[in-house]
Structure formats: C-alpha cells, structure tokens
Image (tube, rainbow over all chains, first blue to last red; front, side, top):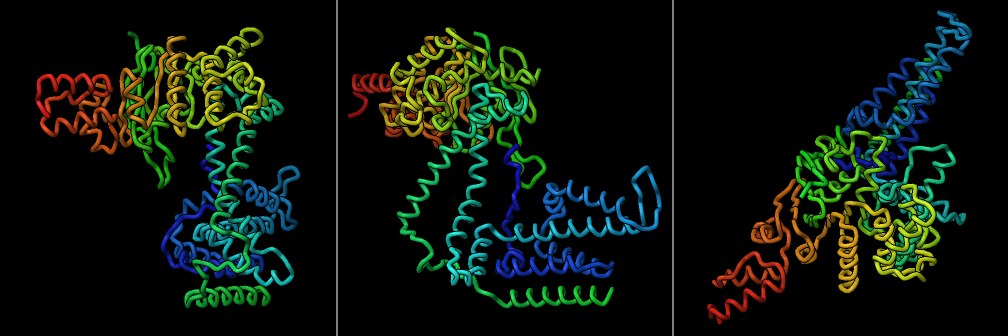
Length: 267
Length: 288
C-alpha cells in the first residue's frame, strides 16, 4: 500500500545521536562520505564499518530498520556487484561464455557493494535520528552566508520543510481518494499503459484541487500569524553547539583524517 | 427477513510485523438484514471506518470473512468490483472526490463503470440527481462551482446512481448546517423507500441515528460494545456515557428525571415518546 513508503523516515528517540545538533550530524555525514570514498584497503574498510556499527549502536537503530532502508537500492547494489564481478580485468578464476570471473573482480565487487551499503545506511542514520524540520533548520543555518549574495536561503528552507511536512498528508489523501473512486467502480489495475494513465484522472484532479485548497489555507494561516518571510524572524529553538557536538566533530575529523592518511600511505 | 451482509469473526491488523502493529477491528461478528436501516456509532478510532471498508471489499480481512447474500465476497478476488456495485460506500467528505467537468458526468462515473450506456445511463443519472434534489440546471455545471452542501449531494448521487442494494454512508452530514443535515437525511430515506435498499449509517450524532435506525451497532476500541434496537441500546444509556459516547438529548432528559425519582422509561429516544412519558407522569402527579 502507499502508506508503506518511507522517505528517510524519522524515528523519535532519546539517544545521544538524537540529541546532537543537526548541523553536527550533517557535517559528520559529509565527513563519513568523504572517508568512505577514500577507503581502499581492508584496514580502512574495517575502520569505516566499525565506525558505522558504533554509530548505529549509539542511535539504537535496529538491523531490521536499516535493511528496510536498503530496500529501494537493492537493484543498484546487485547491478554494481554484478558488473564489478564479471567485468574487471584480472586473473580468471572461472569463465562462462562472455562472463569472466576474476580475482580482482571478486575483490572489487565486494568493495563496491560494501561501500554502497555503508553509504546508504550511513545517511539513513541521519534521517533516522533527525526530524525533517531539524534538518531544514540546520540547512538554513549552514547556508546562511549565501544570503550575502542574495540567495533566498530562508525561503528555500521554508519551501523544503513545507514540502516534507505535506508528503505524508498527500499520501494519505491519495489513498483516500483512490478508495473512494474504487468504491465507484474505478479500476486501477487492469488495462494497458494508456488506460491505466487515464484511470488516474479521477485521482489526480481531486488531489490537485485539494492541494491548492490546502496551500490556500496554509497561506492564510501563516499570514494570520504574521509570517512575512525570514526578515527579522527569531527562533523558538536556537541551535547551539554543545560539548558533545565538539566531541563528535573532533572524532569524526580524526577518523576521516586517519582513513585518508592510511589510504595515501597505501594501506 | 433474510440477512444480506454477514460479518464473521472479522479482524483487521494494520502494519503487521512492525512496532506500529495494531488491530483496527478485532473479532467482530454481526448480521445486517435485508432492507434494514443500521446505525453504527463509536468513537474516532473505534474501527468504524476500517470496518465499513471491508463490507465492499476495499480492504481484505486479516482473518474472518464477509458474506454478501450468503457468498464470501473474496471467493473470487478478480470479481471484487461487482461487489462494489452492489454495496455502495459514500466516504466522509465525499465532495473532495468530484473530478469531472460537469455534475452530470461525475454522477455518471459509477454507472458507466458498471457498463451502462445510452438511455439507461441517462435515466440512472437523472433519477439519482432528482432523488437528492438537484435540479436539471445544475447537471451541466462544473461540480467545482457548487456550494458545499450541493457538492455533497452530487457525490451522494454519484453512488446512488449505481443503485446499490446496500448503501453505506460514513458521516454523511458532517460539516453541514442543521437544515442541510435534515435535507440530506431525507434524501437518504427517499432512496431507501424508492429502491428498498439496506442502509448503514455511520454517525457521531446519536440523535440522527436514533431518529433513523432500526437497529444500532455500538463499537468501542476495535470491538462491538453492544447491538440492538434503539430502545435496547439507549436503555443502557449509562454504559454509553461511561464509554465516552453520547445519548440522544431526549434520553439524557429521561435519565435526569429518573435520577430525581420520576418513574420514567429510561429508554425513550424520541421527542414524541418523551413528551408522552412526561404527560403520563403529570397525569399521575408523580412530580411537581
């Protein structure tokens, strides 16, 4: 069903990872990605994996939730694995037609698959422990310097948080409208592509109408509360770096530096 | 009387296998007789909406079964659409589902999905528009230029046009003014008289249910709390109130009078009954 779609779902919690400043977490993820792409050898991969496992432990994310986060990229992972496995030049171990399994291929495939999985699950930790609102808040703060060159940072952040906020609402609404049209005998499953596309009209028209209505209502509600853009706007929750943020960032930098140096030294 | 819908040990579980797993409907069994007017009441979250979506096959039971005229509706999953034509479901705020260019086309959506065409389709549309009190001049208008109450009636006509044997309505009068409510309920009564169909009315308003239903089903936290005629149900007014539900205003008055020692029937639920009871009391000079 539609409701089962998870777009980087946030799970409220009270772990140290949840308490970190969202800016710290965004920076950590960037550091993590940089380190991940520098890692080459078994040793550096081991460091990254251990780092990831520790972070996952701290965030109290279950293995199940992480695997579920991997679901949308299964095809990409398998495809990458397959390509690397059979199309890397090296010493041939096994041959079947044009498919050539080489020792370097096995090594490469494993490396790439582990890298993608660590990449996806790592960023998943960010959305798992940070609410969408906190994320856009952090982005707004981090992009603040761009205001100097007239980039509408606040407006962009507002647009983003409104969009994120309405995703579940719209999914629910779509579900409801589809049920209602099904109750009138609408058929979304059978027919060719053109017929299927046509069958969506009874869903899309009401969905658009209600989106405009919602937008209108939201605009009025915001105006009633005197919203007039970012100018002079203060915040209820001002982001502050605390001790734990400095600690986390220091650790993050240290691990990244270690991985880069090890990789440069050829380990 | 023969049963038209039988629900047997119906359970519906949402989000199976996740931490959010819960039963929206738990082991519910009941029967709806042909031609009866059944009121369904219960809190938000008592499972009303989930329950009624099983009756026309929009949701499939996690366990248990739904029989329509004695046949399991999921016996042939490919033919589930034919069940939806026999059991019409009008959702809450149905006006948000209008999509066609004209009112006429929107009402025709259901019957034309059934395969009706030409004169037969035209008759279906005009008849149901008339049943809900929409004039000819409205049929060619865009549904989006109508008032809220009119839109609601167009949506209702869109389901009635399929001539379902069972018509299920989820809070059909929510958000309407008192006159609009009374009008809409009259439309529904007219449809019932006209077609002899069975009506299931989900409502928050006890007065509305009390006035119209032959029998009432009370749901509480995913199960059936009680069922019976309005008399039987409202006789247990105290239980209803402690379950956080309401009773009709007239029942409330009767209950209050009883608490003050008046020998009054606690199960009255219409103004006529209540006034008769009070007059009888006056005749006996029991109070005042």
